[in-house]
Image 1 (cartoon, rainbow, N blue to C red):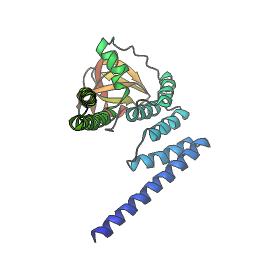
Image 2: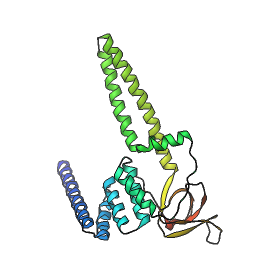
Image 3: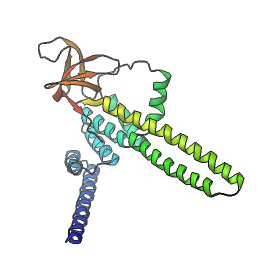
Image 4: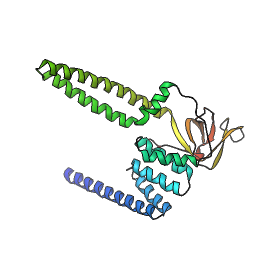
Length: 252
């Protein structure tokens, strides 16, 4: 009975995967034929199956971009980059999408360490850094075993030095992975989805407006009160925005 259930589960997963592939191909064909909204509907069905990928989010971003929907296009390009920070096509299209956004916010100056983190360490997501940790843990263990069983002194020295180097890289990668993960938890990012919204100095409708944001601007969510979100923008300004006016990035 267990074997039968296992086989049925494999068959069901196979059928689901085939259906998703069929939806993805159909959506791509609709996009090529200029039927962007219909393509979005099918891409959304694929997304609802939780079989997401950088390519799926990239295609969704392209579809929304073709419809001049700034907020959704930036949102999905950003999600694609979170899965694959090295995707140059996504980066290039994100630049074009951001040019459609009305807000031109000057970022706060960064320290040397912040620049190094942004320009190098964040080229990989914390999931990709975790893969680096696993690879070097395996490689370091293998080299240590070779050192242990080697009989030639020159080989023992070589295996010892390279294994130590691997473990140093392992520990460094582990530190970066934990730091990136904690940063992603602390800095909940979102995109402004409404055409225009006023940011308040308190989470009430009758409070004072402190600044205005437009569709496509990225914000960091700091806190929540009822249907309000406390946000910070790139230049350091902080305020409260109605929760429905922004779309948070889901955990990926």
